[in-house]
Length: 127
Image (cartoon, rainbow, N blue to C red; front, side, top):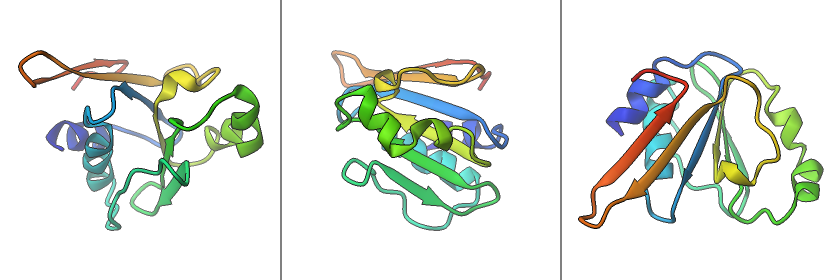
């Protein structure tokens, strides 16, 4: 949560954050921290079944989860490219399934080591 808040405090409109990591690594928890920093008051839930959730705050938050996406055609039908052009911040879980992401995307990888500690790599933003 703390790292998410630090990241969220540095984001501007039209920025994209790409999250990757195994199930249960903490991607949605990180999004909750980002949302808090953006002034989102609604509870953040994993959008796995809805694929996309949108929240109002000081900046709109678009939260996408591509876990159930099976092809680039599905992404196209969902209007994924248009999502990336919207005002606000877009956070994409399971971002490796996206064909392309815009230049300047912040990439975050979360893994869990053998002792249960989270290892988080952030590329594209100093935190």
